Length: 248
Image (cartoon, helix red, strand yellow):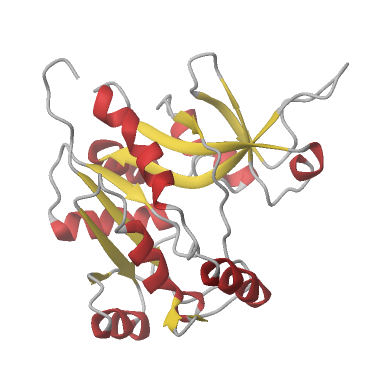
């Protein structure tokens, strides 16, 4: 990093109570502990992180976190995105201006900590990196699923576009597809700028907040991983995650 020391890394887990498909999801019982506890415990295993915090808008989640000794902050109910909630939490914590903040999804109780290490490593070697995220090769059948976000990248590994549609379009042959994994790391100044930009045109159409950054010409470095995500979207996903965690 041209003689500069690596920035400090912090993870914040946004945990809102309201969810159209699964109200109270952060408190869902998984092997005797609420979901947020599993996410926090696994994120804490990433050796690059200085600390991990929970950011919520609900007193029930706040009190449950306190009882389990999980560092937690109360944030506004008015935030439209998890990124906005993370910014408020980072400001409450008065995190260093040159730090890097990781957005850890609160519905990933089987998160592999090595994914966070992969996400953060580019910041340790280059001061030019502004935002990182992860992606993994997926099949054509997976690419057709609008719930799986696809990303196409430049030769340098930076995102060109994210979409719910199968991209790129294979006119003469079936292309390779990259499925986006919704983990992000970004510098504090980019986090603040994200909020100030407001919702973008493409973001409204695709319902993908990362497009706000691309429309503002803020580069996103995509790191390919071999690890899987096992998010919980609906109550019926709990059994599958419990089985995974029981196997270690």
